[in-house]
Length: 246
Picture 1 (spheres, rainbow, N blue to C red):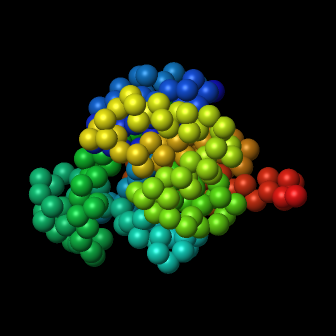
Picture 2: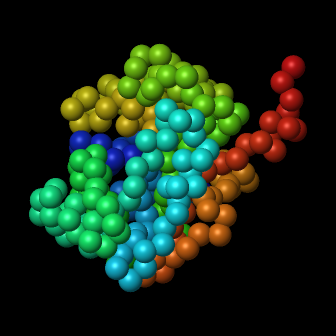
């Protein structure tokens, strides 16, 4: 089994797999799935399973924010409804979302709608891949890798990069080496530093989830196409209890 972390980037998608020491950037989700065999578990930082006029229930974000400190809650933003993905402009998407869910969408959400749409269409059309691709979130995942403690620095600062590399290295000693490999392999206008860190975090989280996996909510709803709506993470509290610090 290969455990893969994926984050959206300007190039398209960046994926990290520690077991094969791979950092791969692809332009489409289809290319990503084709690259990895069926023996892979992929954690991706993108909403999976969407609200719609038919089914307006999705509470992952609201519940996940409860885990984060006040200054980090905004990193988990409201997910647009499926109908808004078809809009050609920001104002149109916001109007559609407001008509169906009672509120518009942010510009931040609008900018990633193409990626939300790409993942959504892929999973709607490929039911067999739904157990292979799971939604996760770097802010939640990093905090749980950090013994449940909120991180001190934001990910786009130098201190934030150092802090996150230190956390990742506790689980994968080769993390810094792989991170530097990614920086050399791709330009910053293709993949940002925090894109790499987020993908690395989700790759580790995917692997740990085999034993310590949990999801928000515990009993997730499904959308109108039967796609599960949950944010997956690894709760290491049992691990820390077994291995007290000396």
